[in-house]
Image 1 (cartoon, rainbow, N blue to C red):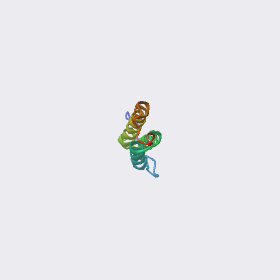
Image 2 (cartoon, rainbow, N blue to C red):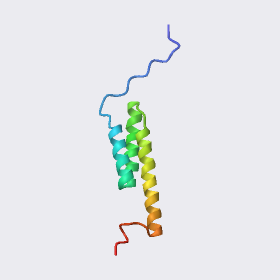
Image 3 (cartoon, one colour):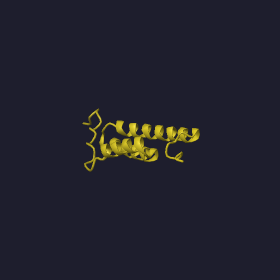
Image 4 (cartoon, rainbow, N blue to C red):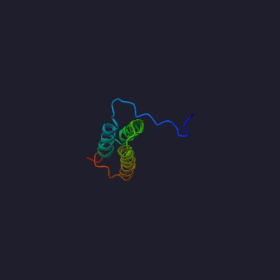
Amino acid sequence: MTSAYPPPTPPPARGRDRSTLWGVLGIVLGLICCGVFGIIFGYLSIRDARRNGQSPLLGYLAIVLGVINIIGGTILRATGNYPFWNRD
């Protein structure tokens, strides 16, 4: 006799969970210096969080801060208010 219910889902694969590490690195780098690295590490955090069944919030936050850093830096450079380029 077969069961009407599907078999239970297996637990996530055991291994190194680096989603928090990637998320924190993405937030720090995306906020302070390099928006592109924030986006990259945010993607890695989301990928690992989905594999391990965790929340991808840190990854999304890293991507958002990386994009804000890129947009803000572009606006500052376009208006001439970027502090590192105007040292005369």
